[in-house]
Length: 338
Ligand code: ATP
Ligand code: FE2
Image (cartoon, rainbow, N blue to C red; front, side, top):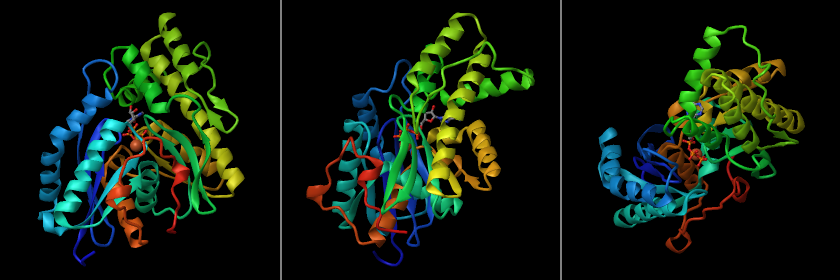
């Protein structure tokens, strides 16, 4: 890459289409994004892909304008190769191929989950953390062991964010439901400072080092049907679901001997889960870190950052190998950097 060249990152795994940049030193700059928000129901992969296609030129122009760049300032193009929804990933990959071919610059397909980790490490200046990755589609506790980010525990069914979004949808709250649940839970506990979870019991989602959230979703809906207020159920749902994640993360810290906890993924925007992680880490003489919210949710900048790191380590993606992989796993990617 030329000395002044920037790396462009394209994120398109699901609902969000996002372009981001890192400069020639790998320093991140905010993304330009657009998110599909269906009026009713969940995300339809084909409709999300059409949205991404329609927005591609606008977002590309806007990200260039955000740093006063010309296309010729782009020295490499990174994109999410997986995991995610096939039709959405394919749009991101085609846009990346087009820009990289037109500009004659390297193409680099990266692992979306690993990108969440690496932007967090850069932002929070973490060395070797245990990552609690809590997003819509994913819930994993991860640590780097023997050259890969290993999944030490994960959800056996749906992601924690999908669980929150589904519960919200059942109450008529549109996607994304997580932030609204946070607000309702906070209002409830501020109005009822001594509230107890008695009577608001939900199944505890821990399964050894793994988690499972479909039972808690059904049980929370049942509490609503029994007449409990929405605020009280949102509060109980957060307390149960977040404690379960924090419990698995604590065990991962204990087993791996590491002393930094790093939050990532959209649900890491939530103040309550941040607070619980800090409490747990402090009790074990460890530290807890969370990147700025714009880098917790899906964003092109984290893709640019991981693309930059991989290029610095000599990896590029040839056109023939640039196909997407919907089922790429966190531990499929060799971590050749430190
Ligand atoms: P991945 O592909 O990594 O699974 P994703 O497609 O789910 O990512 P993200 O942007 O990482 O996308 O996460 C979106 C999720 O984060 C949604 O489920 C949303 O409800 C949840 N979320 C966002 N803000 C909050 C919040 N403040 N509290 C709880 N959940 C939140
Ligand atoms: Fe994500």
